[in-house]
Image 1 (cartoon, rainbow over the protein chains, first blue to last red):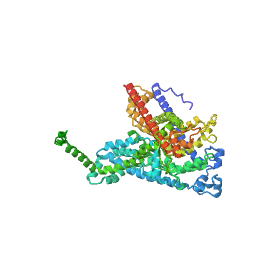
Image 2: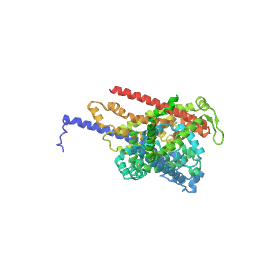
Image 3: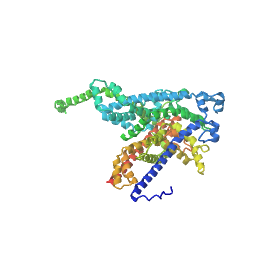
Image 4: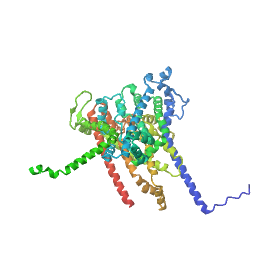
Amino acid sequence: MAAVTPIAPAPVPARTPNRSRLAGLARYGLLYLILAVLAVVFLFPFYSMLIGSLMPKDELFRSYPQLWPPHGPQLTAYKLLLQLASPEEVKGSGLQNINSYNFPRYIFNTLLIAAVAVTLQVFFNTLAGYTFAKRNFPFKNQLFSFIMATLLLPTAINFVPFYLQVAVTFGWRDTYLPFWIPSLATAFGIFLMRQFITSTIPDELVDSATIDGASQLTIVIRIVMPIMAGGMVVLGILTFVGVYNEFILTNLIISKPDLRTVQLFLANFKAATIRAPLYDLLFAGSVMATIPLLVIFFVFQRKLVEGVMSGAIKG
Amino acid sequence: MAQIIQSPGAYSPPKPALATRGRSLLKEMWKHRVDYVFIAPFFIVFAIFGVYPMVWGLRLSLSRWPGGQKPMTWVGLDNYAGLLASDPLLGKAFANTLMLLGWILPTGLAFALVVAVLLNARRLKGRGIFRTIYFLPFVTSGVIVAIVFSQFLDKDYGWVNLLLGKIGLAPVPWLVETVPAQLSITMLLHWMGSGTNILIFLGALQAIDRELYEAAEIDGANAIQSFFRITLPMLRPVLLFMIITATIGLINLYAQVKLLTNGRPENNTVTMFMRMMDLVASNRFGEGAALGFIIGAVILVITFVQLRLLRNWWTIEGNLSK
């Protein structure tokens, strides 16, 4: 072993690429470090929500913030919201009337509103998107430009009269119709579906079906929709998330306790306990409210990401 | 005169032609009736829930109406004048909204662009995972984000002050004092919205031809030069789209701020949309409708100015590169 000679200096030409590779490695190391720190920042609120929901209230306020519940995770807050808690737990919750809140019902209501809205919007927007993408008829371009121009109308302009119209004139207070009917077909949805259909469905396919004597509706349902499933999923998810998380209109329209959405419940609950927020319950409710969206997000993640990435470029 | 009236024969040839053209257009439209039915839902819904409230809202904005069965009294421009001249909060709301716009828009877009450029690094592994993580806040609602952040920023029990304490800094009264409260809203909006912006920028970056950068590198351009000479100009259409949509989004800001600060302290975080909702809540519908039109006008003016400025930037850059 003693025979090992000191390493000879490397020949000069070999040195430069070696050093630049090291510099490259260092640069990428720094890049990964920055990206990882950002990932922690983006994930941490989710984590703190989850951990907070697993701690009893007094622990939350005595020793919070903690990265891990000092006495192990506890499901008391979840049991309280799902009405599975024992009388002692109800007593300790700081909220005697906790059982008057029907949390599962609020989740169900929200899912119902979102599911119907998604079905309607995806169907009618695909119908219109197909027509603008593949059909030719008088005034087509003018009508499409008009639809695009409506995108620039600020919501605030007619928000107050719109609310009065649906709530008072139509008497739709305490119904879900305001979330379904006015947005049956939307400018954004038509635009998105037209983009997808133009870029994925060849004219020949539609033409050959037309020659075979298929009606337009048959073509849309039998040929366009199956091919367009990906695009419909993108529009469906964007709609679902938007409607599921809606708060402004819900807050004005829904006043019956049984019809509350989960967002409305959480907002009211936070406002009602503003002096000493019951964060254990608020967090447990938030976690349960977010789970359906997280499931959808992860199942359709790739489609959604691609949809958001490509939709805006074409726009 | 009489002669002209009596001699329609001279003008008769174009008439049938016009009529036939009209009739053939109608025929053509009738032939395409299914197409019109397919696109009809949007127009029907827009007429009933878009145009009609706007027209009726104009009348409402010129009236006093406390709702219910009570009569609507015509007050002319009183609502507008009252709001603009003597509303105790509108001036503050306007200033707050403009200020949020003035710093959230540029910092948010710059942050998203930098992250997107980092994610676009050629040999980066795990790009999809980072992309997904940054986009995750997209699923949260304004209500839930406000709940999480109000705990995060709690003066005594919050994470942010704990962290500041760990590095030896004094706790910040986040939701209690004006500037910290504004910073709180900024943090919340950046956390919530950056993911989408990053995705859109990343999509646009990936659409830029790599050969452009290779050519620039051969010409001796460094990374910063290629960013300002290639990346930024190529992103202009996307940037324009994002600036305009983000502006509208920020002016319509409501749920997050309502639940995080509720305008505190001393109404220094009240937004214009919040003021409008307060008017609705106190049954001052005429003024609410008027404020809606005022907000709409503000958005139009801001969008117009942005388009103007960006167009100038466009041509200045274009001239420079020539």
